[in-house]
Image 1 (spheres, rainbow, N blue to C red):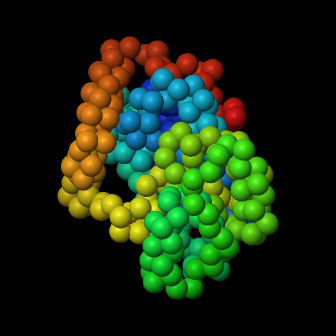
Image 2 (cartoon, helix red, strand yellow):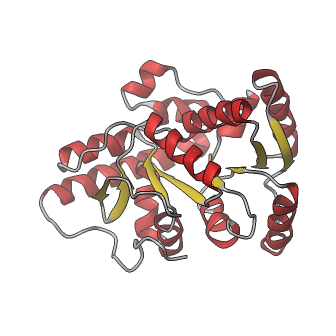
Image 3 (spheres, one colour):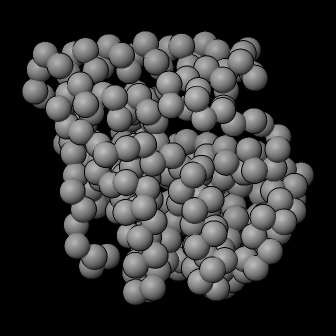
Length: 263
C-alpha cells in the first residue's frame, strides 16, 4: 500500500505499529477509500510466544501491513522495555468499529469463520446492531486446505470491501498470507473468537478485567479444562521472555522470520 508508514516499535523482534484505536480506524478507512490492500495482524502474549515456536506463523503475522497490540500484556511489556505503544488495540473492538464505519460509508463486508450455527447467530446479531450494513457474503470456518482457493475466489466474486476472519491462529494468519490478495478485498482483519462473542456463545470479560489485563483469566474460567493450562503456560513463557529481553538487546525472533513483506 502507498500510505505513509506509521510509527513502529520492535518488540521481541516483531515490528508493531504504535497506533491508537482512532488512528488505526482512520488508517483502515483511508486504505479502503483509496482502493489499497491492507492486511491487519494482531498479537497478544500467547501469539508472541507461539511465533517463537512457529516460523510460518511469525512470517504470516509480520507480513501484515499493520501489526497491532491486541493484548494488554503486550502494551505493558512495551513500557517495561522502553518501546512504548500508545494503547491496546483489541481485535474485537477494532472489528466493531469497522462494522460501524462500513455501515455508515456503505461499504460491504464478508464474514469467514466459526461453526455454521454460530455464524448464523452472529449474522442475526449483526443485522440488529448494524441494520444498514451491506453483507456481501459469509461462510463457516470449517474447510480443508484444498478448499481455500475456491473460498478466496468466492470472496472476490462477492465484491466485498472488508473481510473478517473469525478463525483461530495460525489458521487465520496463514489464510491471510496465502489468499488475502486473491480475495481482492481492500481490508483483511483476523478477529479470532470475536464471532463467538458477538453471537453470544462466549462472554467477553468486563471492562475492569480488561483494564487489569485479566481478560485471559476470565476466558479461562469459562473453559478451564481446554484453556486453563494453555493460558498459564503461555503467560509464564511471556513473562520469562520479557524478563530476558530486559537484560539483553538481541531480538527473540530472528529477523529472517519476522521481516515485513515475507509471505
